[in-house]
Length: 447
Image (cartoon, rainbow, N blue to C red; front, side, top):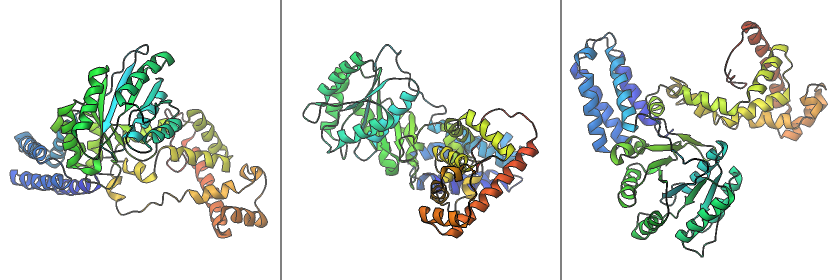
C-alpha cells in the first residue's frame, strides 16, 4: 500500500511510547519530531504537517494524558483521532437525484491519472446498486480514449454514448443527456479530456460545459503517486472550475501517499473514493477512519468483512460447511473457494487489513501466482476425477501433470495437501459441534 513506509515509521514511534510506563513532555516532544519527519517524507503538505503536529502535541501533553494509566496508548489514540479529522472524519457519499431525474457527473483530471478507467469503475458500482448509468465519451483529443471507454463500459455492462472525435465536447454532452432522457438512463458520467498539465484551454472547455449543462457533481481524479503535485492539481481545478470531491487513484502503488493526508485539509474537498488496483472492481469508498487505521498499523477489519460479504455467496457457504462436516468436499468445491478468494483481491492486501499483520508481512513475499498451479492441476482432471468418482492412479497422475505442465511430484504434493485439508476441515467442523453461527464464512484458506 502507498503508506507502507509511513506506517512502519509511525509504528516504531508508537512502540517507543508504549514501552514507557510514564511519559514526560519531552518524550512527547521527541515523538512528535519523528512523526513530523515521517509525514514530510511521505510528501504530506508541510502546512498540514505543522498544524497536525501542533494539535496532537497540545492534546498529548495534557495532564489527563501524561498521568493516565496508559499514556502511550492515549497519545496513539489522539494521533488516530486527529488523522481521522485530517482526512475528513466521515465517509462522504454522493446524493443522487431521484430515479426519475438525471444526475450528471462530470469527471475531470490530467492525463495519466486513470480517469477513464475510474469512471467505468464508478459507473459499474452504481449499476450494481440499481442505477441506470450512461458513460459519455467527451475526450475527443487523446488517441484511443473513446475506444478505451467503450471497452471498459462493455466490461462493466454500462452503455457508452459517443459521437466520435469530430464534435465539440459540449455538443456531445448535450446530445448524451437527451439520449439518456429518451432511454431511461438516470445517471450520466461525462468523461472529459485530460491534458498533460493544467492549461487555460482545458479549463475553458470544462467551464463551458458547467455553464451550459446542469452538472450535479464535478469530480476530480488525481494520481496519488504524484504526491504533493496531486494536491496542487486539486487546488487549481477547485479554484478555476470548482470541484465537489476527489478520487485518488493508484493508492495501492509503491508511493508516499501524502496526497490522501493533504487534499481535504488544503482544498476543503472530500476524498470520495480510492483506486486500489487495476481491476474494474478495485475502487473503494474512502473511509477516513479506516484509512487512518491502516496507516497506523491497526488493520481494517470492516473493509475485510465487506470484501468477504461481497465476494461470498451465503447459500454456497452453508452448502460448503455441510460438505466440510461430511468430508464430501471435492476438487470442484476447491475451485469455487479459490474463485471467491480471488474476488476479494490479493492475499497480501487481505492480510494487510488484519490488525498487526501489515508490519509482520513487510518482509514476507507472498506468491500471488501460487494458486495457478492447483488450478491448472484440477482443470487437467476429468469431470469424474474432480468429483472424486474416479481414483487418481499413477497413469492418471501422469496425464494430469502433462496437461497442467507440471511434474508428477507437484501433482502428488497437491493431492496430499488436499486430503490433509479435508481432514482438518472435518476436525474443525466437529470441534464446532452443532453451533449455529451467524454472518458469512470466509473462504477456504482464510477460515
